Length: 110
Length: 121
Image 1 (cartoon, rainbow over the protein chains, first blue to last red):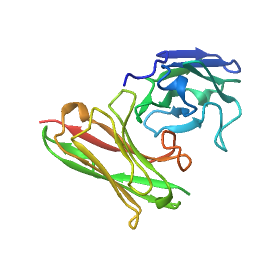
Image 2: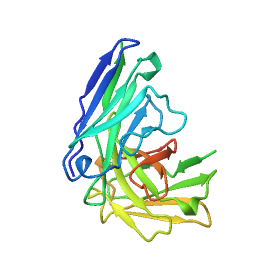
Image 3: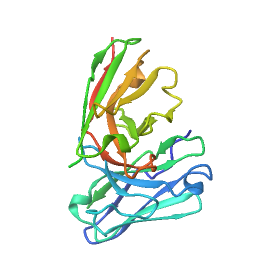
Image 4: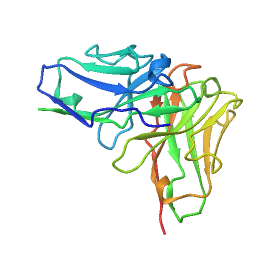
């Protein structure tokens, strides 16, 4: 199972919005609702930010939103803040009953 | 408060074995499926294995199939990963993680702090 494709890095200024893409296939992202996004700060465990494509766990800021179109899922962060600077990973359930992650995207807040 | 605490990591020679444990608290352990996810130094996340709440369903990544065995003891609120035939490429921080909601095993809502496994001679 190949990793989902994410851009290696994205950047934005405080207050701006950014979008991180996550491209898979019809056997993973495109075929199921089980797409999630994780935020990871250095030397910390990942934190669930989005599940089931577009749902936010309680406690996660509404500045974070998720969507999906075809085989590509997206995470949008609006009103960028300094504390959003982190690595972001997408993941998806697959038709082989496995879980696949994206390679990760480093978000820099300028 | 949900807590997951991994232990058992360390330095092991290639070909060796190691058993990781994950102690769970703050939720009804027997009601949730659990995953092991690893992260090589400076790299991304890689899913390793899943076990359902009753141990009836188990999945492995191809990279560890036949070498690693996942198990759980619901009476002890504990998750395990027996790792045999370790290779240098198994070097990583190993996280145990709980599915976000029962039945949604591919989405992990709670993570431990991780335990480092280093495979080197």
